[in-house]
Image: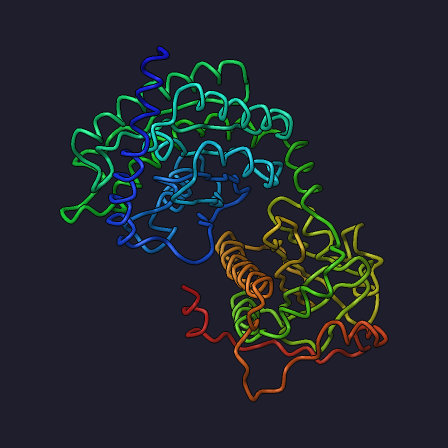
Length: 458
């Protein structure tokens, strides 16, 4: 682009900034997803995707990430691969290319199989010059190349035309769209130097992305998600066959976290919802015991439990510490025949643990901090896909509670509403007590299956 054209962009910027702010006021009146920035499509060996950006990543027009692009993408990937999908979101309506490097620098990229970015609309609205754009994108991609591990793909979605966004119309919008084409060409040229980066464009959905009121629709997000899934599926299928990489990622995400006692304390302070989940898990498996565990460096804390009065146990006796090192959870049909556990005091001693099924849970930092598990004193030869799907679904609910609890604590808000019920002893107090092993004759009681409760999982 010529120096004269660049100067014209610079002179037009104040006008365009004012126009964009005026239009943004109209856009901000739309519904926008709230709640945890994640969408999940249940299935085995879930692919993990991170969505970063403004525009389509924000989810204007719907009130849930499940109805917006993250949920649509998770479902599209599951339909394409037959595996599960987890889509995390870092979205900001004001995000620009200058923010992208900072977001990438502050994110654990090694958790993900692919990262998808949707930035550029704000840059075009503010008449960012191609030189500025190129410099910002190059800085972000240099950082990506230095931090992303081999096998992770960065898919950069081109700046979408303003005609796809409600409220942005007229001569000014057409000028922005012409600049967007230039910015997209600049990105394509830079990406050629980075083998783990690709670009794509989102076409206009049939009938448009918006309804008669100018709101984005779930159908529009489903259309875009199908395009993105088609771009990602070959890459994800290739990674799914790399067992060494899967094991490496699980190892990096797993640790007995140093602040495990603090997390356990926070969760114990608001354990009512967790108690309901462990009750459902025990009922669904018709098992005597279900536990939500948090793993510290030397202790497994039971922040919620059904069918057993055991607050903690030494980490060396923990089944969950092994389960969180697996990509898709762990099932032990008969612990007496499993060399990892046959000599465990919980198996060889009076507790008579035989069956275990556990699914990892993560904190907002991506660490696998514990598990939702069910335990039985009887071995089981068969664990059905439906049972595992139920356990994964319940573990996702536990994880949402973990994320929300940690977020409230970080904001200085009460972890849970105060109730007259007696609170569980805080984990920090329990640390000072002698660890209680399972009694010689544990009071296991096989629960009746509460059908209504199981049906309420939803």
